[in-house]
Length: 492
RNA sequence: CGGGGUGUAGCGUAGCCCGGUAUCGCGCCUCGUUUGGGACGAGGAGGUCGUCAGUUCGAAUCUGGCCACCCCGACCA
Image 1 (cartoon, rainbow, N blue to C red):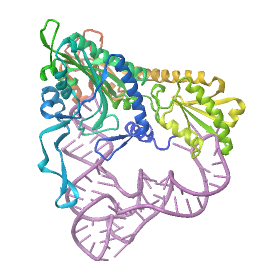
Image 2 (tube, helix red, strand yellow):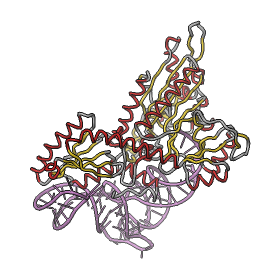
Image 3 (cartoon, helix red, strand yellow):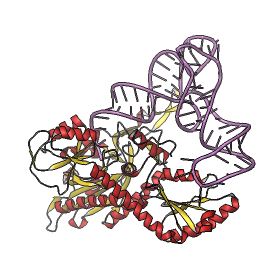
């Protein structure tokens, strides 16, 4: 059993924190609200990046990079967007330090080096990007413009949690420009589907696709589409958003194009992003009291081989067999690590790889060599089996698939169990407190009702599901007529 | 930004009320025995007690300021 992981049942958020730290994913840093992503955590993020980047390119996007700093005048151009982020912006006001005349060993901000115009550290890049697009777009021939950037952004959060909410985080932001409203909406939906496919097929986390209410909408967007996932503790997590920005940014930055008839019009825009927050979703979907569980498709190492031996000669003998097995597995496209450290004992390695979430562990000892077998342990179910070594490549290939599928199935079942319908406000509150999870309920469609429910219960409308069933009902709060049920939950 | 808490070796801690240069565990280093689920024994290294100032012959301990981090609330991906 793990040494230092608080059990989920005892304290879910301590458990989460323990997993992040003990599995070597990330650490708190010396900077308030900012984390250090450690090699193991970063390796998983890199797998996510690689997959998403490939998917973006397959849908016609290209990468570029825009500045970290945004002049205040640009930032404030799209008013709603600026207003939405104003409270959490880091601002650069000076460009030089100097030695403190009162204390030679200290530095102070040089008051003479005040910037003419303050620079905002980007909380998102619409402003600088649309200011740039203005120069790139003149004609319908320049459209669509399909650009993505991988970057860090800063949002000065009051309260932070590793991966889920940090002052600085890593993400990708896609920013596209289109000739028509329809095309922009299609792009918004396409990217939402890309996210859903990634999160479900690679992260093995089922998501609900939907649209945000005006209250929850991205500042500056006409519509915000989202994917919502449900964590083990019954709280929802927004895993990705895709925004239809209408002509808001085109108008704010005066980005017009000439159509085939020479008529000038503002372009239509989208933006979409996912962040290192996905790491939090991954952890809170699959991991257990023994440590991290990583789905095979995102595992930096899919299979670890641990030798069991006595003495130097023993290791040499086992290693010969392992090298053959390793090559065999690699030829099937499986990533394999041979953990031949002679500084740790097998039991220690078993525990360590369990903690770090390696999907499959193979044990080979001299006994196996005599019998022509290997011991295979799967991380998701914590079960072990002894198989013939010549079956290894096929067996492990299937096993990795089955682990990936099993994790997804389990997550779907959990979500189903934690999804309910409420027909009255009393029932709604009871379900929320006793069960949590997604709660479908009729809502009268007004921001006032949404706000009141939020203040009274801490539950928010996570989304209005896409292709939602239209039906007559009455709002659980106001009793007014409603045409559809929306999804409520307490959220991260 | 409000409420609560913590800061002592790499990590977790005792000591603080009642001032006299610091306890224990894990980890680390060396040697030996071990190796199929977190090994054992012996020896060893490692500290401006968050920081600045004050009180005192003497401060981890008392007083004041500051800083950082964690948890809970309001805000957000």
